[in-house]
Amino acid sequence: MGGCMSTPSEDPVADKRSKEIDRQLREDEKKLAKEVKLLLLGAGASGKSTILKQMRLIHNKPFEPIEIEDYRKLTFSNIVGGMRTIIDVMDELNLAVLSENRRYISLVDSEPPINTGETYPIKYLNALKSLWADPNVQECYKRGNEFALAENMPYFYADLDRLFESGYRPTSDDILRVRSKTTGITETRFPLNDVVFRLFDVGGQRSERRKWASCFENVTAILFLVSLSDYNSCLIEDRESNGMQEALLLFDSICNSQWFVKTSIILFLNKADILMDKIKDPQQQIKKHFSEFEGKPGSFNDAVEFFKMKFRSLNRTPSKEIYCHVTTAVDVQNVKIVMAACQDTILKNALRDMAII
Image 1: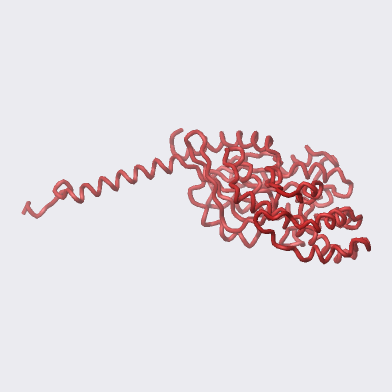
Image 2: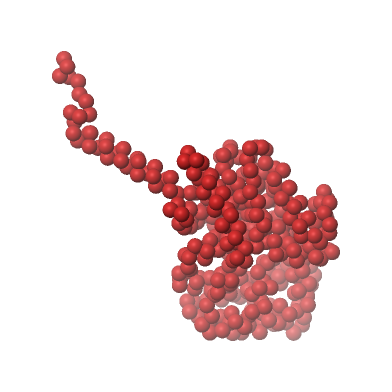
């Protein structure tokens, strides 16, 4: 009867396959152990894509020529589309451009596609210059927080002559400031100390958030971005909602999610430069929008500490630490310093998850 029994060694084919499966599992475990998965989350226009671009620059992953050309085309769309939005908002505010600038409105309304290598149509240069110099356009732009107007307009409009030059090629600064809505999920990989960081950028506007759940497994850390300048701004998709309140609600749901009980959260209080400029204006004080603010009017440090407290107070897990950094995503040196500090935190937590420390 013993002849009816078998062992793996009596079936060399099955035995070989079993060893191969074991070997593959060990290889997969090693590969997983050398990868760190990071999620880049936050509300729309918080600066996530800008941080992702900075990470590429910091880790020497230059933009390909085809990407640079796409950004060149997108820059034209930003400057023309941004002005078109201002003109539309002026109608709502019962503002009108000066009579000599009316002829340019139809030009701004009909944005042509830019072909590869094609210089921007020169007729737009004087039109955009004249419109940007129009006092009523500037009056409207001062109220940009009420209508989610693009924050990159002053940067590009200060240098229109360069953008319209033949052979114009976007600089790194241009690429960092050009705005495009993130849809879907993009992944960027970069190595650090024999570990591959996989950074996932997910669209932040409300319609995109349903896609987030597909990224939630095996996350080492979350980089959550907040636009400090949104304390008095509306959402692109909902003018009735305050951008900072939206960020607080979103952070609450992420920080206390069952998916992220053991996940490190690194909070980036971003757009510090814009906050600093805004709060100098007596008409844009934080207390007007957050009555509980007791800091000194116009004090950048008081403002930052207030918002740090607001976000940290949402954490309902005492053992979870919220690492906080103040950033200006378009400032390469600032982001480089902050990310160096973050990488230490991320690697330590990755090693902890692997049970190495």
